Image (cartoon, rainbow, N blue to C red; front, side, top):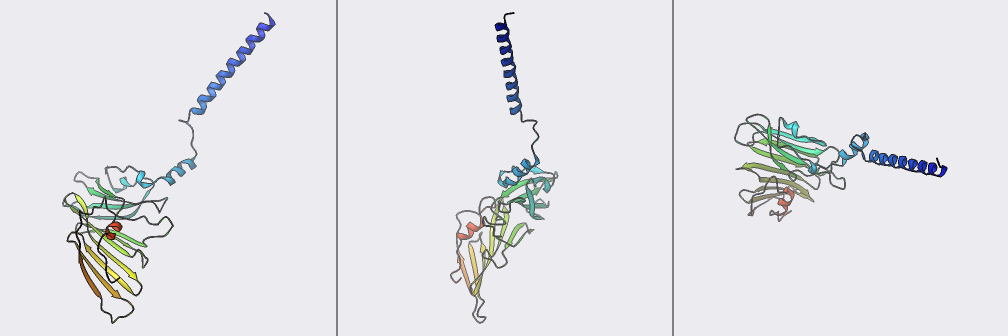
Length: 249
């Protein structure tokens, strides 16, 4: 064979093998389906997940079925919320990786066939445990069910947030904010306020803490809401801002 022709064929063969090798390398680089992902990557994704990104199930065998990763139960209450004589459950879920994240309050109604139904969920009924600046809003938190009413009690232990108790009750098919009770301390006095949102009445009691001989100041104010305040929709802090306060505190 002519030496020049032989060398030409040899060069073509080498180039052909090189192209096949490069093509195979591209396929390998793109095939990540079976790639082993380091454990650190999974942990990083979970720690960055916000609770509002979760899709909670509509039904579950027990309350634990609604506690998805990265949730942890911060508060739990059991009792009767409707008229079926089946004990319901309310749980407040917190992000175990981020105490500044929004907290979810889930109302789980017991079903006659067994299990629970996610009836309502609120992202506003309970504040995050900590502010973005790292300040703990309330130092004591409690929820309980009594006489078909859900109570959420939050106390700051004398801090600026004071004490706030919100009461919710099912009226027809809506879980409605029916009452609010607050307690705040100031310079030389403290204020106790009771709001009946169904009757539209606010009562304030101002106590002078510097002079015991000073009588308490009692005020009654009336107000009218444009609509009912709902568990799923309304933030109690904003509701309070629009209710009549005390003239003596």
